[in-house]
Length: 172
Image (tube, rainbow, N blue to C red; front, top):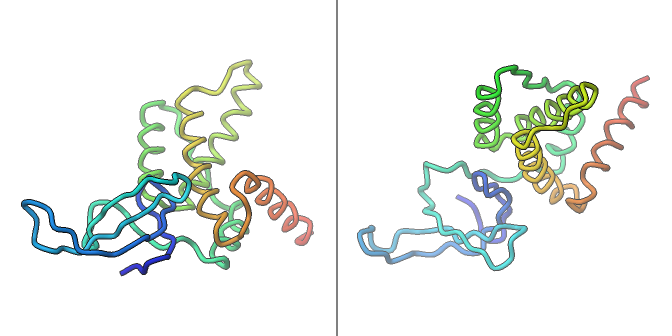
């Protein structure tokens, strides 16, 4: 069970703060069932009510600082999702986003970065679908990493690039 004040990931809503844990009395539901009151971290004023017994939507604690740094150190070794078929590729992106797994988000970002480079060399733009999933993956990953690393979301891409480059220099 999560605690009030804790940062968690709630499905594709991303980082949320557990604002309260309280019984709710709703028609047709067991009397006084406990619910988390979640506040999406980057949407002030918004609240989500979810049963503490929720089994449908992934809920997990955000990464610790050590886990976040370890993930960044592993990024160069995380494989891409190279799939030629557009429909299959989009389904895989959806699956990765719904998994709430940071490594899967890294895979999407790496894939779409390389795909963008390839398309630009061919004189083409990135597709709207690719752009959408790149934005979603970045938002979810960077917002989660920003909390334990105490780095603003807007600076996270630069922070990661510097850490990766620093690790390459350190290993040469």
